[in-house]
Length: 286
Image (cartoon, rainbow, N blue to C red; front, side, top):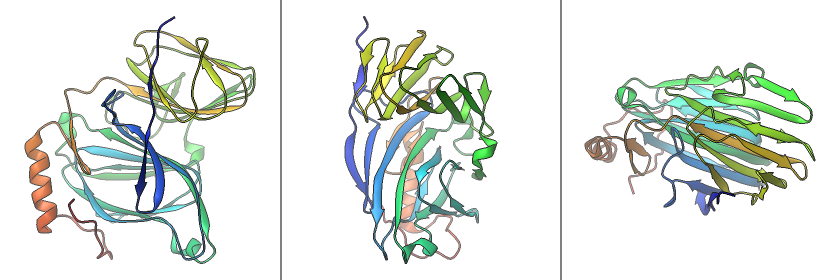
């Protein structure tokens, strides 16, 4: 039986929101186009408090926010202003330069609110690194679902399990949410070269090996593998084609060429960057 590579995430705090971050790690820098994976842990904000990630920059990546509970407001330098709820996809492609904010909507601050979800970053192919920015919001009803024999799969982005998402990914991608009832099985086909599973909750085995909750498990390339649910469980599956070359990451910047990162750092520090309409606060360069 092959030994699986298991990544135990490190705990972080983003502007008061506790998270677990399995990617990037020393064991794995990317899975398909995925170079960053944040699990925003279930959090209750009392009245008057909430998430507030001020204006900050990105290059060379797409961000995808997907919530299980709560609401977030997304605003960006393209002029987008969108409230994002559970089961919805907030997709932003940075291109050469974009800035955005993410915060608890003002309508929820007075009463208090809860938040639980994921944000992932997908590195852009080299041909799109210097391209224009883009934002799109996708309603849950627009995301394809497969449901059979106690297993429910929602394809968030890319292709997989004979499903295709409407999210405009830039390279071959697999991003799926999986719910399994007790004693059900699911074959994970080797339809993408790189794949990994993140166990949100529940007891599950992969080819007979028990997976730890809140860990990222890398699947061996080219092998079909079978999940068995020992109890009701909730998982995320990510993957896709390997990146078209190594990527550098520095703060909020991702690029194939280190010079692009240095240029972005200089521009943000100098205030030479697109701004989010109506926003004055920003996160300074670390």
